[in-house]
Image 1 (cartoon, helix red, strand yellow):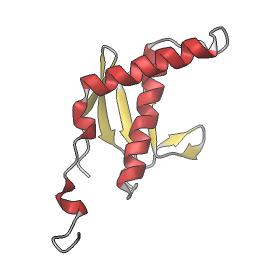
Image 2 (cartoon, rainbow, N blue to C red):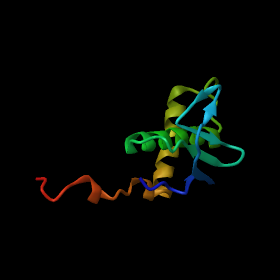
Image 3 (cartoon, helix red, strand yellow):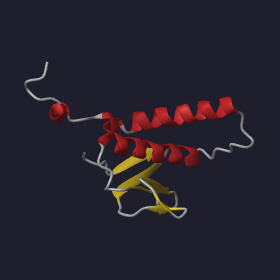
Length: 112
């Protein structure tokens, strides 16, 4: 899978890089996000495209929560869901290339 080089979350651009041996809270993880450096790191050892995409979206959701300053203690659930859905929608609008896929590899000429 070809990895994106950056993603826009709200008004902030995060670089996307592959990095071996991502450790978070003492355990190896598939991905992590560095809010200060504006970098999303993805473990290149992930072999399945679905896992890569899910990991990227997992980190994007962390980015949305951070950039929109969510306060899960003081904010009602409906407000959180509303703001999160707006943030996801904005990421989709700002980064349509996330959904582009080369389907040539998915099918052989002999399939119906």
